[in-house]
Image 1 (cartoon, protein in one colour):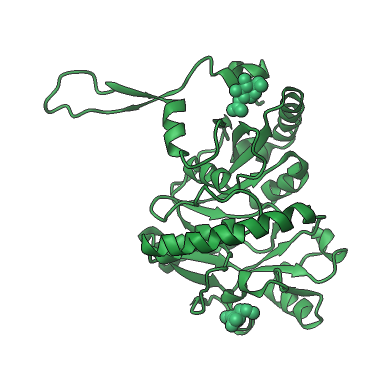
Image 2 (spheres, rainbow, N blue to C red):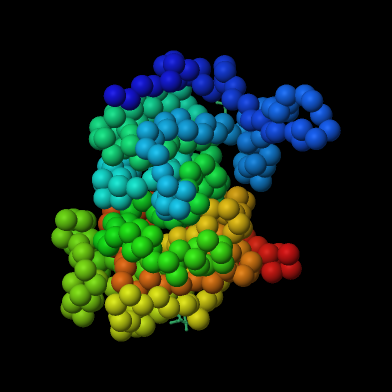
Length: 350
Ligand SMILES: *[C@@H]1O[C@H](CO)[C@@H](O)[C@H](O)[C@H]1NC(C)=O
Ligand SMILES: *[C@@H]1O[C@H](CO)[C@@H](O)[C@H](O)[C@H]1NC(C)=O
């Protein structure tokens, strides 16, 4: 049974924060006999500083739903962001992964919309035991539609394990990279050191129709390679090569089982799906709003900070095709191209 916190029974109430969570810090006992939890910081104040380069006003509600599961610190939490029209594909990810997931859901601050969305979210969340066992849901309520990097940072900040994967919701997890990573001491050691980002290579079907039915997707590398040879599947976004080609797909195809190889041809548009240490690597720059460059900016800063990319050559993701909002994307990509080129210069100097 899932119980909804009473503060959320009346959906509109939480926006006004009737019972504020406060965070507290211990003080040194050596020079003081005051109680250990002496200093409390208001949650909203703290979050406004944590996300101070995001657009405001914005209301963040961490752990709107909190998973019942207890996660091993060394597990890998999938961090992702969704909007209400992607609930079904999200449910599929949860069923498939069966591991910790931290998701940020954006809610447009429009009263009727909020009520409908929270109702359908409740239906979604209570629909499967995996959902309430594995998924922590964080809400963002505001008028800004595509603050992707802020939403990514929220999902990462509230992830409850040491390692996270930054993933887009449309990808189908074809192989069990989670078990493979956790069973490999050398790979775990790389993650713990905080200087590695593990790449799970991404693919897509060359025709839109074939990529719509995940039940037919390849589950082994052999099956994938056959589909690549017959040109039914190709690297993800082959028409925009710099996005993924640093993964070096030829090397991936010819790698022997168990191989992990380092990316040697990094360039600044590279935006693979990666697993890394939650605490340490730089966070996503929140000034990127809308489509284009936002994820590449996260990875660029990681790269400059000294993180290396390693490809897990037994594993892969396949994109589940759906209709894009192409017109919006085009415009936002244009303005983000300019932002990204300024950002690269600035980050490099930093
Ligand atoms: C949401 O909308 C309400 C009503 O218009 C407004 O009072 C509130 O400040 C808004 N909050 C945010 C975070 O935009
Ligand atoms: C990736 O694509 C870009 C642009 O097409 C090209 O310049 C670059 O050499 C390619 N890199 C790799 C590793 O294939």
